[in-house]
Image 1 (tube, rainbow, N blue to C red):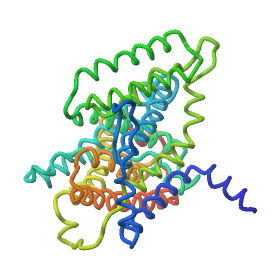
Image 2 (image 1 turned 180 degrees about the vertical axis):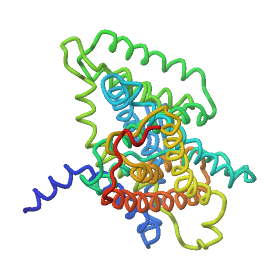
Image 3 (image 1 turned 135 degrees about the vertical axis):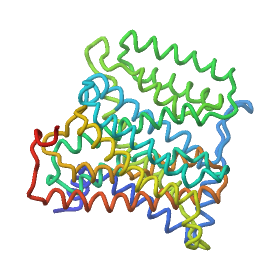
Amino acid sequence: MNLRTAFDDFFKSDASGGILLMLSAVAALVIANSSLAGLYESFLGSYLAVTLNGTGLEKPLILWINDGLMAVFFFLIGLELKREIVEGKLKNPRDVILPGAAAVGGMAVPALVFFAFNSSSPETLGGWAIPAATDIAFALGVLALVGKRAPAALKVFLLTLAILDDLGAIVIIALFYTADLKIDYLLLSLIPLAGLVLLNRNGSHRIAPAILLGAVMWFLVLKSGVHATLAGVVTAFLIPIKDKYGKSPLHALEHGLTPYVLYGIVPIFAFANAGVVLSGIGISDLLSPLPLGIALGLIVGKQVGVFGVTFAMVKLGLARLPFGVTWAHIYGIACLAGIGFTMSLFIGGLSFSDPALMNEVRIGVLSGSVISAIVGYTVLVMASRGEERQPLAAETP
């Protein structure tokens, strides 16, 4: 096997995105604790300005990544959500009930766990949503490492749960992470929005005008104080599934954008946000309310929320387990749902501007995500090796 074939095989694997994400995080962790730490910080803090006659945007590079590149990430999530709602896994409400309920439990319980540890710390309480998120790429990557030993229906369950989890995260960002609202810019953003609606209604087959209008809306939403990543989601939902010629601009965009987001934007985000400074950190720091609430929210909260709600739904006769899936598999998926990483770090960045608190956020997210990944993988491998596979009828009361 030559090098080119090896690269092709790697990028065709479902695990490739998660592996690259992990390597980017490790690289950030190593550099942040090396002699290159100063260069790393100064590079991310360097300012980039795009202005015209003194009007425009001037932000440090880290915010261009978190506000700009992540808007493209959310744009892709929006495309996936619309496709799944119109013609995919979210089209049939019956198929959504169980993973949907699990997603709600997997967001609510981690937030409660975080609150339990931070209720007496007003300065950290704003991070309650950090452990509520699941990283799709990382979680699916770990599941892919289990291979064909896991039932095919398990991937669909995890994917649906993670998609709905991301939808919940988008709603949380919209409702709770808007600061210094400027109505004039928000009203101006309705102009490109109207243009997008018109293009969608007419079944426009041209992608460039929609992207241009989306970029203008992103700028205006960013200036309004509402988080600009939401402009990416709104733009995505206004890309036509079918144009007037019967072709799919949405499918074309999703297919073309996925490798750039999976192998470019998400690893860049991980590299820019996962640099935990370990010097001076002791046991007391690891056990402080913020990192402990995040880590236990991801590890314990996700397991209790996802598995507990799924168990209750099935035993109450409101839903049934997917074919070939056992309770051990569901527990493994509940563990994988605790891999917050990208979304958790993103929400952490929205919650805290203090570098010291963000370092604690990184500690909590990384430790919670790594432990969740290891436990989830171990449980799924053991479950897949088990001889006992309960039939569907045995899982319903």
